[in-house]
Image: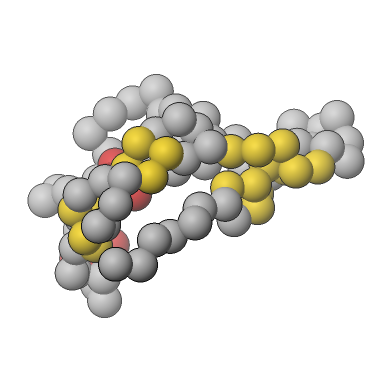
Length: 86
């Protein structure tokens, strides 16, 4: 994944987000079952009701990708994961 939106790699300042299990902030260790919060609305979960079960543990590490400008969104970072099968 490549993005220039810092909200993906910055740790959120507020908790209890309905998508908390799916956050991708830098340094996060992800494992187990990922699912929507019970507070998530029907429109949010529609077509995505089944939880995701991870068989391994993943550490999310964003890497600098490109810095084409000094604008607010001028820094691009990449998140690459080697998803293990089995």
